[in-house]
Image 1: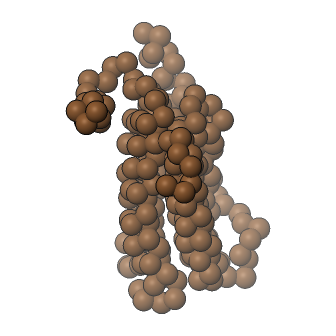
Image 2 (image 1 turned 45 degrees about the vertical axis):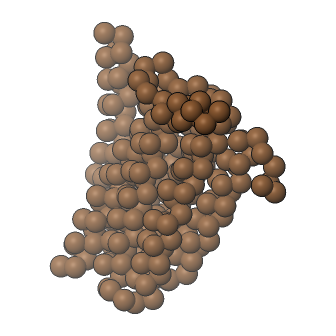
Length: 124
Length: 112
């Protein structure tokens, strides 16, 4: 019963935010000279920002260090998708280059942090 | 027409992303969170990149870079997840109380 009471407000808030994002019209201050699929891309960016906020909640609240490492890794993968969507909106292809570089940095970073977590030095 | 198919791919990937992040917030354990979030978010982002490939019109500059990013993500993301899980288990982070099996610990006892 207590679990149901805790579940219902969270579900209502999350679904309400997503419905609000889908229904509301999107007005952009960026990319005004080349507006390709602008409303669709704006809503996609809002939903990606919402899921990034959930990931950052886990970074702040995570009980152990491994939780934080996992959350940072997931955050890097979300940024790759964000850069791909922005490259549709602006029509410039170098946004995906930013995504690939960010993914590479995130991969190397999580490998190094997991090795540090394991308790060995970086030479092994 | 091909734009609409690409937008459908982007929407499916977006729903995978949101559900994976919800799993990252709600599940009780490091290993459960890793299991939910890594697979969902990797496949969702690959679907978003494939939708970008379709919307940008096939093998243009943007589409080709999107395909390269798909290959890169599929190669690197499971490696990072495996390394984090192994490091967490070796660092002694306990499993959730409701877990039923821990095969890696049994294997380590067999070796020693």
